[in-house]
Length: 100
Image (cartoon, rainbow, N blue to C red; front, side):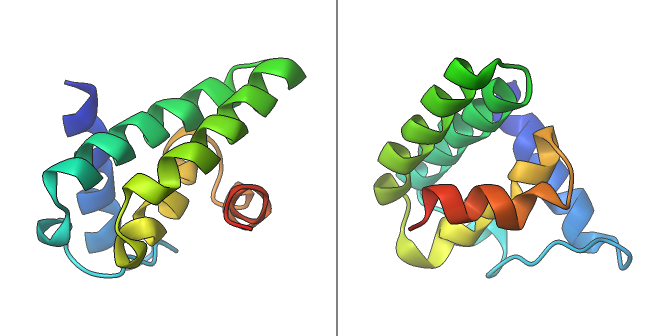
């Protein structure tokens, strides 16, 4: 159920002309492993959004460890998922912390 939520959110945002979302392509380019890893990353962003500083640090560490499981060309999907749990303006700040 949760995987469908983040996938649906990305689809809706990508079709909204007012959305600042920048996807590298359609969701069809994702492999099964990408989908599972992005689902886990989406859960990490949700954990970050509702945690104290210790939980936030753990969520960021988990995203850093999960990113290699996503194809390099599909990693921008993980960046855009930040706004699913947080705000659009959080994307650049948080992405810099996990994609260094």
